[in-house]
Amino acid sequence: MLKLLFLFLLLKYSILQNPPTDHWDYQREGPDTWQHRFDSCEGEAQSPIDIRTSTVKYDPNLSSLSLNGYITNISLYVWNFTHNGHTIIVYPPPLARLSISGANLPEDFYLIQFHFHWGYNAYQGSEHTIDGIKYPLEMHFVHEANFSKALAVVSILFRLQRDDNLHINELLSILNRTTNTSMFVEKQIDISRLFPTASSPRFYLYNGSLTTPPCTENVTWIILARTVPISSYQLEIFMNNSVSFNFRPPQKLHSRTVSANFRPEPHEEEHENTHHSSACSQQISVLFLSLIFVIFMCESI
Image (cartoon, rainbow, N blue to C red; front, side, top):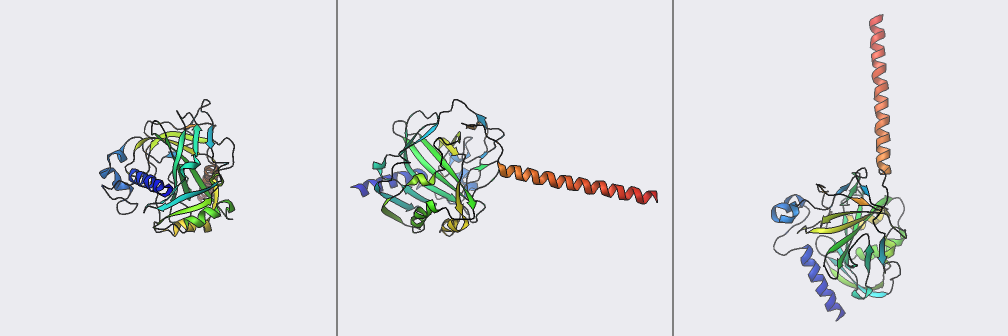
């Protein structure tokens, strides 16, 4: 009976993200073509976006995000791992009752699945970017409200580091076996290990859409500001998948506003790039002045 319930949920959300009326992918029939076959994909509230920290609005009235059951729920349950031809989707057991609240959401939103977006190298893969900076991996935790059926997605960005992240090895070993298949795994999976360690996480919030066809809008996006580490070796599990990359490029923000529950500062990598550009400009200026001086001395002789 439990497996039949899983299959029903799998069919329901497979239809939501992969309508049978039209084929799409990330290559020949990729993101550039979606708007010609799916009307919503050319809307003005599309996701993902590039989050420019200089224009983010700090909202002191934005309530804290609560992850209900994520930290303590490590019971033995049956999870479903499905490769749907576009990504790997993990369906939690209904009895787990994982949910989010706060962040000015009108009601509790319950986890229905989480999935991954990656690239064909370690320097791209995320759908959302911050100050133009790409990340190698992005996870989307998709939640649905019981009454309104609205969607809220919590996004986690992964940053590249030298050493393996030991906390995610167990999950990665299962994902490595999920290629063009669907399987049930009875296991204690502590998905809190996938979240940045913070009791009250900092986050960006905006109104957007699904990042895959049919690109349905009116999705609340919650992008965690803190990243999770992953090594290049661990990323190979995704890059060696039958789908080499599966990210949609950032879409125009249009008239939307990105809010945050903290005062964001420009990304530190942006500081580094700015410092590097400034140093280069100073060197060019010195060389230019030196050249003028040499020319002046030659004309004076």
